[in-house]
Length: 321
Image (cartoon, rainbow, N blue to C red; front, side, top):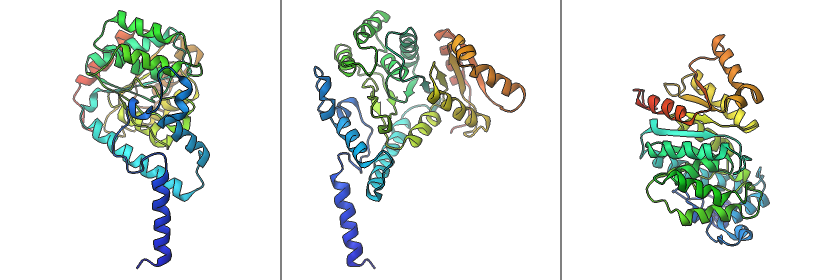
């Protein structure tokens, strides 16, 4: 039996949940129009007044590590709904065609690797793969730009990148505006991609090039979702600490065959992954000594080789996850 005190507490909870700037009962993924509702394409400073900006400000105000039980409940309910919507969305596609791209959020639009990632993502999208990423800037943005430009010519992709390069970093004023200008000039209605960002890194705007956006408060849920859903394989582009974490987190899943089979782990950038960040020879050595098993490793500088590895893997018959 609920007492009057209990009823009052329930009312307090409901009042709190009703006043959050985000919907705690949301049952759908976001898209760029919803996430950036209120953002003006010619005014980068308007970000603070859009939905995403307001939620991030509220997230900071209530504490990135919330102390309020009510706020903890609100975020959990929101993330639960996003996770359910994510599962429903992914259920519409062949799991073997989901490919993730990992890499540095700080990768400038002007660096050679940026157009390489975009071109790779474009090719894979056109071959029927669904591209996934952490949904932020840098290598993540390049992934979704490529998917957004699928079905267009390589010259059009070059033109889109040229429109973006005057603002190389997400720290540059105009970074978000330039992305929306590209989207306006080159509308996309056929192909999809999925970004999975988090308000934990809310200072890094989510890329609007992702047609579907599963934005979480809880970064651990978000990280696990990216790695788990990339059944068709993961491509690692140059990155730092976060990318290293993702490499070994995925290696554990493959080692234990957590979902019944191992997926390709492809490292794009021979020099980087062999010398500058020599994780590839380490993984090879761990495989040789039996410390790790079941790792399907590839190291290349050729995006066509990446495509071949992923296409061949997608044709193999594997148990359903």
